Amino acid sequence: MIKESNLLAERAVYREVVEAGDYYLRPLQQGQTIRILDLEGNQAADTLFYNAHDLSERYSAIDTIREQGNVYLSAGSVLFSNEGNPMLEIVADTCGRHDTLGGACATESNTVRYALEKRCMHACRDSWLLAVAENQQYGMSKRDITHNINFFMNVPVTPQGGLSFADGISDAGKYVELTANMDVIVLISNCPQLNNPCNAYNPTPIEILIWD
Amino acid sequence: MSETIHYQDSIPGGCHWSMVLKKGLTLRLVDEEGGANVGMLLYNPNNLLERYNAPDTLKCQHTFKLTRGNCLYSDMGRVFCSIVEDTVGWHDTVCGNTTKKIVAQKWGERRYQQFRNDWQLNGYDSFLVEVAKYGLGKKDLAANLNLFSKVSVDDSGNLHFDGTAAKSGGFIDLRFEMDTLVVLHTCPHPLNPAPQYPKKPVGFQIRASKSVADDDLCKNHCPENRRGFRNTELYTLGAA
Image 1 (spheres, helix red, strand yellow):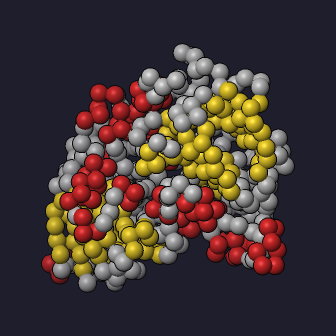
Image 2: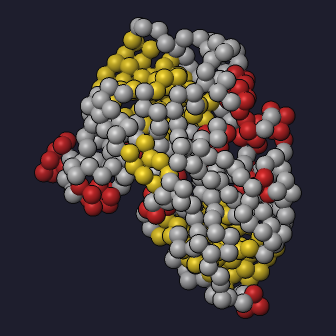
Image 3: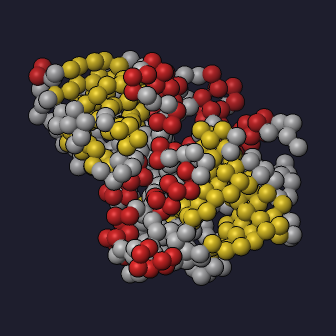
């Protein structure tokens, strides 16, 4: 569902451009709203959320899918934790549909999906593991790298049970906004994948904006 | 799969169990009465950080449903096991588990103090108890399989639970391509609309697998699976 935001960029309390292939790891307070902005179009933002006060409570794709009875995320979707608590709600979305089935790319899954020789190409799970290693104040490890959301990514499922990574439906300037129902940590990999259409074969920057 | 059954037993409905299945074994799970559900998670017993990864499994085989010909992948690009036989045709891996709250809302609470072992366990707590036996906890629960449960999606993405898929006598054969810790529960699927908590027993049989031929169905299901098998062969190189 397309729903535009009334928030003005110049009133944001925080802005950061995240280059393709980099990560973003920062807290978001209860009541704050975060916008993820697709600056140049068709850019997957692989995203995980954690309860800032207990990182073992985290975004759960399976609980979110089941509770809303639908596999796609858009405005109105409530993101549930593995404890069954609402963590964030998507309050605006000019893209219309986001994926939470496809997971994140990894060097190992790249060998399976594309070619054994692709094992040394940069991947989202490497970005997350670097984020974990460079931010030891959070006490995270590989156990915290779980089943994510792919904002701006289009993974249609058919009634016959097919699933594919399709051309993106996002475009330059499209965005998604979420309001936090609890204090959370946001971990994003701005996807470096070069082998499928999720980034239009050309990874580009995203921008993060936060409002109180 | 050879005809000799090395071990067989039945797990009552609403219970949990775990076991390590070695490379070269095939596990048959049987829906004894119809309407069963088996929640399942897979781990590498030699590196518990390597575990079943539903997104990797679905995307590399371009499928939302799991059935004969599909492989179940770890997050490390390897094949834990292959679905070599399947009479059900569609197994879910995106709907997760019942929780204490879901069971209470759908079927009411049945506490141990009153009902003893005829209580009503939930899938989430069952997994927590079972993985704790290996030093794992809630951080280690990935998106699980729900074997015997068909959940399709319409054109708008809405989920539809199909209660007719799990028939009495239905079975699935999992051929293990590497040593695998199998954690399972037999609690109902969270979308099962049954008026009473469905307690459906699941039989299991363990046999030796036939050797994997060059023209093996699962290995050749798609080019991705050939590469997944290659990764797994490298990992098990030199093993007895």
